[in-house]
Length: 73
Image (cartoon, rainbow, N blue to C red; front, side, top):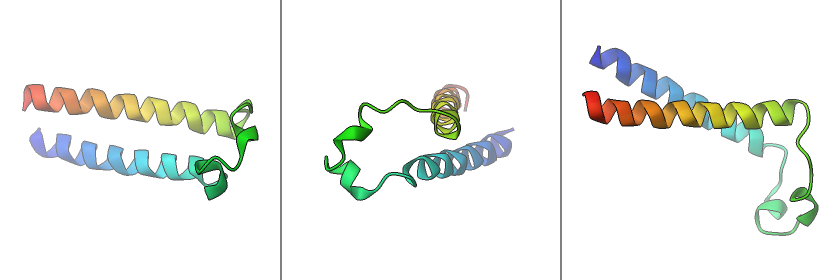
């Protein structure tokens, strides 16, 4: 049981990193340092919105599993 939990956490963390990197792939460094102010007022649509929602979901599952892992193991 413990081994399966650790494997699930590793896979989930890798998935979270991939989803975050896919999300940040479209934006450049200028947006990260305040050079692109138009990105703040933009609406997410299509694949960008799906990636955003998937990131939130994966992060929530990761946090819940982390808390449960500390509590149960």
